Image 1 (cartoon, rainbow, N blue to C red):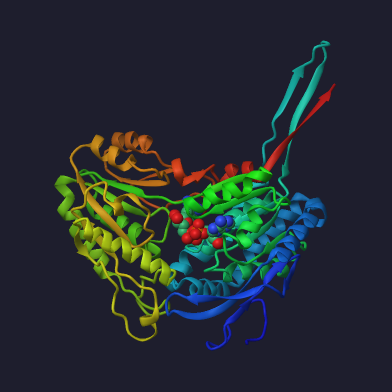
Image 2 (image 1 turned 135 degrees about the horizontal axis):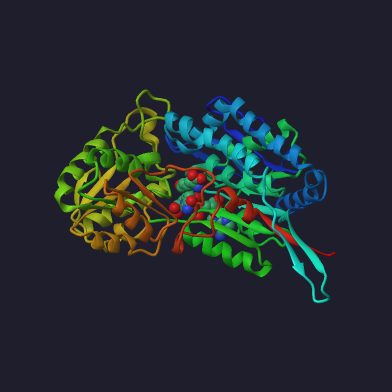
Length: 498
Ligand code: NAD
Ligand code: 6OD
């Protein structure tokens, strides 16, 4: 067994041990479980499943932080600590980068440009957001002819549980931790059981910057009947903020109901893209091939249904086929590699099941559809081919269910109404991407899409102050800028008879 330490990339044969971080310390205990590098299939770390005693200890430590040093800290000091966290993530950039790559297998360039910088940025943005909060003040007439002054004070909720997924582990976890802490809450993070490494590193960073004990805690483990469910049902936790699958959100809702917790959910999607014949088609091909294949399609916002106006259909399909075939799968650090594995063998089986289902429903496989033949260590990785289908009916299984893989069905349309109707014909409502040079159409179609974000001539462009979330079964509530502040704090109205 390797030496126990919080984190650090040891020699290849010796997996890193990831311990739970409770009350400002890495603690022993919990059943060990393997963390697998998806690019090679090898175990690279061992985490420890937090049991009830550890979850209880985390809640008690978080509560003590809210009632102690963290809760009584000045706003200026709290903001300075959040900025120090961002600075420290940047100073330890390579540690975070290598940990994220080991957990996810994603290409070096992607983690370098997206995941780690956004992890740091989330802390800076919410340190700023909390600085200038408006207050609501109303002077009122009283029945006795006098006056009273009302003003609302924003307070933290208390202990907030953060449950995060594996696709963009640091980015999506800090997207919730940063505003929750900015508002003065203590947080307990349950990262995905596939990708706990960067959350563990964040625990180290919290200690390094002098964060009060218990303000940030990490408990590892699984969902149902494990650490996740213990957290979502715990009476000492006031709110759960969750990113993950829609059916997991429903399970969390059930488990949080008896203690009436505040909930914020960012859930699954089956996102449409629409390409009109008046679009810049080369830009649409470039933008949407990135959207379909980035992070091997494991982005909640990725379009898996692309509706293309018939006159440009063949040109678009040929263009996206060429882009798919130019992708280079392989190990994250290999020169030129820009296409990583799926997160696990289980997820690969699920995605390949959808590849088969597309065939069963009569798809034309424009490109891909299988598993690439890779040599060396990557042969043990969980790779699939980037895949494009045509010839499917709009109600085919792969056009209705979220796959979360590097694939899309391309379907022709003849009128704007038909495209909008097909795009909105889903139980999900996360994002859409519309491609057109007609300004009126951009506004018209953008407005009627039943989604939380409607991109026009772009995709995954995010100002972190804007509302983010899903409609229909893609989410509950919005986060981002003041929307995050509204979720992670609650106003108390003070009414003073003058
Ligand atoms: P998941 O729902 O399987 O797991 C997410 C987290 O929930 C993990 O930490 C898991 O351990 C935990 N969990 C599972 N069951 C639980 C339970 N009963 N109680 C408490 N915790 C539980 O999701 P995933 O497979 O990690 O991520 C992929 C999914 O996430 C996709 O559906 C994707 O669309 C969605 N997602 C959505 C967004 C968004 O912003 N809307 C962003 C990223 C991913
Ligand atoms: O950009 C973000 O803040 C965000 N929540 C992105 C979600 C990506 C989904 O996989």
